[in-house]
Amino acid sequence: MSNHTFSKRVWLAAPVLAGLGLLAPQLSQTVMAQETVKIGMILPMTGPSSSTGRQQEAAAKLFIQQNGATVAGKKIELIVKDDTGAPDVTKRLAQELIVNDKVSVLLGFGLTPLALSVAPLATQAKVPQIVTAAATAMITEQSPFIVRTSFTLPQASVPMAEWSLKNNIKKVVTLVTDYGPGLDAEKWFSDTITKGGGTVVENLRVPLRNPDFAPFLQRVKDASPDAVFVFVPSGFGAAFMKQFVERGFDKAGIKLIATGDVTDDDLLQEIGDPALGVVNTHHYSASHNSPENKAFVEAFRKANNNMRPNFMAVGAYDGMQLIYKALDKTKGNTDGEALIAAMKGMSWTSVRGPVSIDPDTRDIVQNIYVRKVEKVGTELYNQEFATIEAVKDPFKAAKK
Ligand code: PHB
Image (cartoon, rainbow, N blue to C red; front, side, top):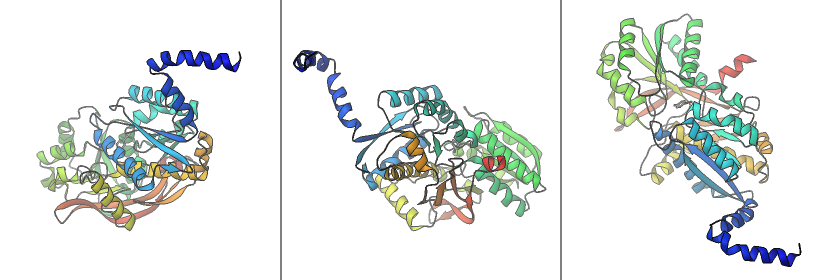
């Protein structure tokens, strides 16, 4: 076919294609493919975990606003999708983002089942999947293309058990949400406290969907332990605390200890005074005392109608940080294997403190802080009072 015939055919077909809305996107895609790096962010923007979506989207956008939308000469485009917290939707959206939008990186994943539904796609398509929220330890083992910037439940739960042993908490009941992260929290807290001479008298598991804590709390009361150790996912802490107080626990002499998911910064004001004095362990508090964090909290509040950032926001902020750093290192090369190689061993000063990506496990290594809920002025905060430095995920460390 001569060039003339070809261009004539295109010319003739152009009005038809344009009429179908097909020509413009096709042309712009070819041009943009050389210059734009697309990042597909999948989050629960609706449903019971919508606070995670709201926090993470706000943080990713703030990061781009602060650092510019160009890295290594490429333009960054963030595409945010709502999976409503349903794994089949997460998977479909990931497929569409990979095949149609040709994203270079996937980011987000608000709950463990949502992250797991995408892992085989990340492997097949060789697209990095940055998990910024979900925290069951085994997630990073499901694809060599997964890197995590949130945390793992064993990482947060072991220090809680160690603190309990040092503080005369010997007889405990655990109460967790009945799925991946809850089972991790239960196992690693229970094993650590048992090894240290404590006793776990009951392991209680509450359903993820429409949890009613009341019957479980009654069982905790009947067992009269020194403390109840609790994990519920971000967004569920206020419902739990309400029932905890309604059943008179604050006066029953049974201490509440938890991972920081329960006393989430996003909910702490709503929970109010019943949270005062709760000791918990986690990787981020909005009151973390560093210049980086002060600037982050201030900018986040300013950009988001005074919303306080929680640990989910920081997971996404660092996820963007990791992508920018990796693109810088590959000089804009978006090949999935090159990006993952660049991410391994990467370290930076996060607003949560110093962090790095473990090159063997692709999980984040970070400080875990022991905190107590206290009033600062008129607001409640998780006030850090002890630091366990550079904690690796214990689940993977134990396998070595
Ligand atoms: C999870 O589903 O992995 C998850 C969700 C929320 C949390 C922690 C873990 O706060």
